[in-house]
Amino acid sequence: MNFDVAIIGGGPAASTCGGLLRKYQPDIKVGIFERETFPRDHVGESQLPIISEVLDELGVWDKIEAADFPVKIGATYRWGNSNDLWDFNFLLNAEFKEEKRPAKYAGQRFDTAFQVDRSIYDKILLDHSRELGCDVFENCAVREIKKAGDRVSGLVLENGETVQARYYIDASGHSGLLRRAMGIGIEEPSNLRNIAIWDYWQNAEWAVNIGIGGTRIQVMSIGYGWLWFIPLSPTRTSIGLVCPADYYKNCGLKPEELLLKAIADEPRIGALTAKGTREGKLSTTKDWSFVAERMAGENWLLIGEAAGFADPILSAGLSLAHISAREAAFSIMEADRGANKAWLFGQYEKRNRRKVLQHIMFADYWYTANAHFTELRAYVSEIAKGVGLDLDAESAFRWLSTGGFVEADMVVGGIALFSLDGMHLIAKRLSEKPPESMTDGHSLFILNLKGAELTDIGYYKAGRVMRLPAYRRDEKILPLEGMFGRLVEGLQYSPSLDRAVALIQESLATDGLEYDAGFHSQMVQCLEAMARDGWVKCKKYEGATPIRVDFNTDNGFIQTNTEAVS
Image (cartoon, rainbow, N blue to C red; front, side, top):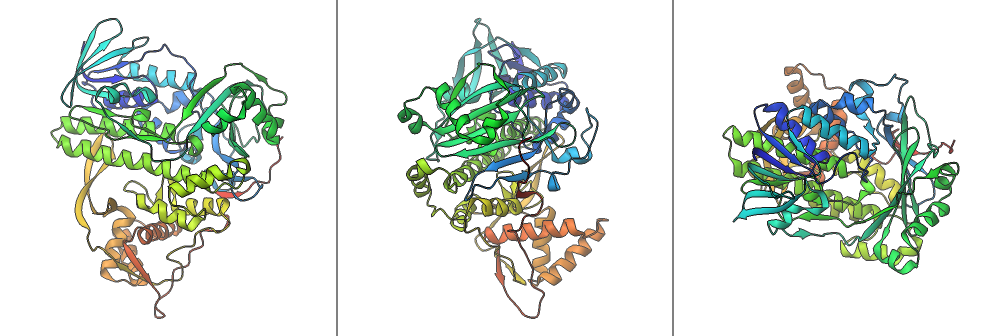
């Protein structure tokens, strides 16, 4: 069998990559080889809003929406330095308006996500890739990967058939079939060594009903780990426990016993499951964060969990899968147009390694800042020691900034798909001493480009990979597009923020845009990210108006939970 692109695995990353290849380049021949027959259950059900944008681009949004998955408005946590519940909302004050379903990808749905039953979700995606023209082979395992140096020369299937292609994609998840065959090692930068134990419940109650079909997942910290509670349909719920592997080995309980004990130990989850029944599909896995040492070669790319995995506390697994798949597809198509393949694959690898590492770092911070792990305090302290934290938010922010707060494809500064504003508010919930703004009270911002080199970075849009100018220094980037670019231009004109903003206003007006509250918020967060990454030096000057920033006040997106279990 001969293809342009052969994809190992049939999960969301594979379907997204194959589907987008066929959407934007209909004459490309794509083969997807999945060892199982769908549908099948799979863990990793909670999504972030960025996925909805990819689903819409893929043309599968309407099918996913029609499946009637719960709309994720955010999450409720018991996590941090108090017993108070707090909410992380995707919409201001969780104001999800009454709206008939199925709905279109428009309005408030731009800012929401899904909580998906993977047995249904993955099949919808795989079938959609087939409808787009991918050749999909289920119950068709890859048994051997032939190679010649850094090139993959073919695949041997379980039935003895061989597959040849111009490009090969490893979307085989934790198995990492191609990654292992090519001798690519993994890095495990985190000291976390967790396991997950989960099952499914029928007729558990939702913690909250918001609008039509809207709810929040529940993430409840207990002394020896944390529980997830993720409604997947009006009747089905995924419930699981994450705890350190060492704790499980030493507790003397079987996986089922430990999961049921955790539910009994957490009053909120216990109340929600009181009238429900278990399906009895108990599963376990290890949740050890890792990143591949390489994600791209001469004619191959790693996507999804084959490329890296971050602890599930941030609900980022599917986001990383869909995003990496999209960027891999775009990279192949741009190479076919004659662009420099080495540059394209290098950009893909740098971006996606950075994304995975950021999520791993941020997950470590979540664990080290959790005062509820009373039985594991020494263990959590060891995690903190291993990554150089002092268990306070400011030191954590300094440590997180080694990965860079400026993101090339974010409207505002941030990390791990969280805006800088949101990160400050999260830090308030996790630490008794949250970090303070670096820009608050300052009026002069002097650009610091010493040691930076002008380079190009990739920008992924509508099936293309475009080169955008940026500064790079110590693996940190400063794009010269969007609000970051406007700030650089304004501060080169004058370090006075008053004058710089005036120039930004003129620039926006030239483009037919008005400098409104939204643009001001973008500017504030971009400036804070630039300060954190060392691109500007902040100074106070009486002759100019100081900027006022308060990241530590509840803003309706992160706030104290006042709802009782219904």
